[in-house]
Length: 369
Image: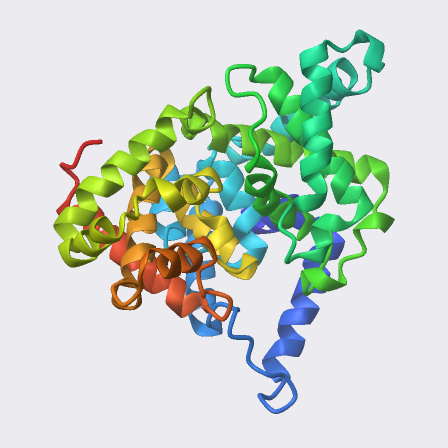
């Protein structure tokens, strides 16, 4: 079993990174609270270690039980195991651990071929529609998650543009929709964390070798596509999936918080006024980015149920501000809902939202859009 564990660690991060991680864990275990302030955005250490033990028990098998992996991952994944868990739950990697490296090599090679076919060709060989898409992505890329300087680095700007453009070319039914640039960022963050230790504010991504960056892009691209397959109709023409989410949320709000629903109706505030933005970015813009990957753990663990679960997350988020909202008029509510006061939120706040959302999925699982 421990040989499997060593192979797993080497595959996930490389031998050097495994050694570095061991040193960092040993250093952390000997540090005191006085020398290292508690990070309120970090998962509780005791909880994280328990999750790691449960996940390693699953990952160290020759054939990974995806259902068990989803069950445990739903409650959050330690950062060092997040890349491999996401890849497995999204179907990027097979259950058989012996095939992982071959699959990764094949996928990365396929991504390089897509680059040659779609991105690296001269503009004269691109259609007007493709050039228009490329221009729009280039305009949106600098606006990506403005609270995180990492995504403004030139290397990641190029990565964002390449991944989004190739996906638009290979998925013409949805193409590129504004907001997808933000949805891509958790994947870039998670797969870059294999290369760079510590806080992402210290990552010198512009120094990374081009070949390594393209490999990371390939992993991001395929996982991003897998996630998008589950929410495709939220980004196709006229976005029918988002319309369904809004209708379902309207039905549920009447049942869960009739007072808030009545107040919003009296003030003339409709869910469409603010939830289209929420659903377009899968609610990530409404939370500090430090909490987004934890949210993505649960989204990805939900599998094909992600679209329904996003509705319950949005509902739990809205209802958490019910008392404040009921004391506001239309203008006050719309201003607050377009920029929720969640900047200071911690993992505990997010866990409360996810717990509430889960509870409601069990109670209202018969609700249809």
